[in-house]
Length: 58
Image 1 (spheres, rainbow, N blue to C red):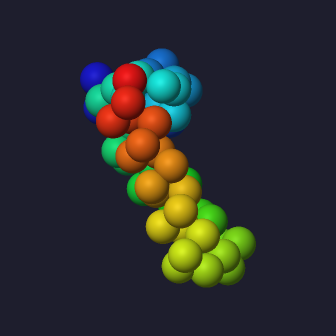
Image 2: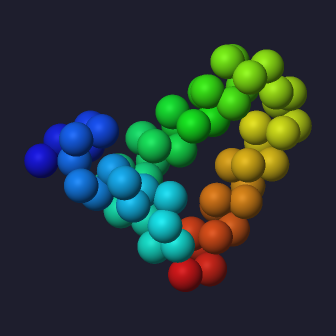
């Protein structure tokens, strides 16, 4: 099943263990934070680093 919002795995994309939708969901989240909420590059990079740390240390 494609990774879309109607995919059950999409709801768990930010869980501690990443799934096939995690990369797309994180991209959408970072885009939302950066462009729609006008957060700075450092904040967006911090969020990305936090998810990288979480997923690297499963």
